Length: 273
Image 1 (cartoon, rainbow, N blue to C red):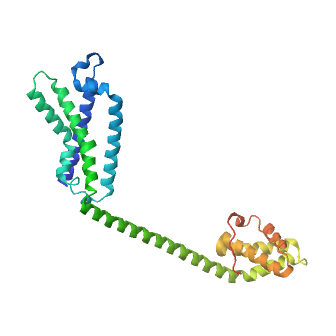
Image 2 (image 1 turned 90 degrees about the horizontal axis):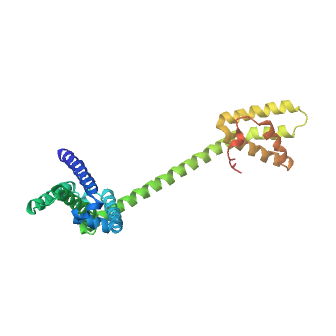
Image 3 (image 1 turned 60 degrees about the horizontal axis):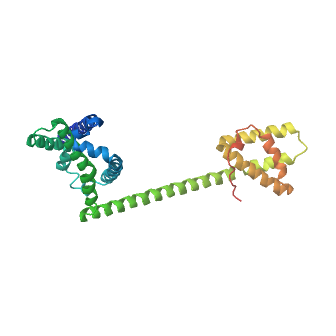
């Protein structure tokens, strides 16, 4: 826990120092006095090339970082070790120390500028070149390849289990729905025949037949909602077809049921024939 906290502290401290060094270099650029720093000259002359190269290196570094995060630490024994992480996070200070050595060895130099330049150069080399290269090279190690294959097999087996479970749940839902519809089929048979008799019976008044049809619709709605009502409707149409050889007469049922239970708002279900 302490090592993790220390790594986090060094990470933020190194990042802050790197940003500060970069900001100092930026403000050290003086177009009227380019001879102040040969390094600034190079940056000014090849700014487009350096920008493209930096963007490419950043993309490679990001790709390597994603690879390392996706894999288990054991697949990257070097870059996942604490020693390497300390080196990675402290690289801005290592670069600054190298710049300080140069300042001590060479008289007449701008100390802060050289230290900031050393920090930016070393950090960029470590973060954008060395770390991605080492991370990618680790992928080709025998142990890393073996562990990656094991991880791929485990992931594939997990996906297959999830797929099998999903299909199993779908099949269970289908069977349960079929069972419910079969139960409705048996329970609604008398009501379907009664509805067919209502639409073909001309001896009773329209109001009486409508009231009874609404009572049946409410009963079906309590039994299974709109789907149950729709199944009953199609069963009644079938019964009308058997009685009169014409199921269009069952359209009266839909007129009588209009506004009852919102039964038209759902896709009709197929009845068992």
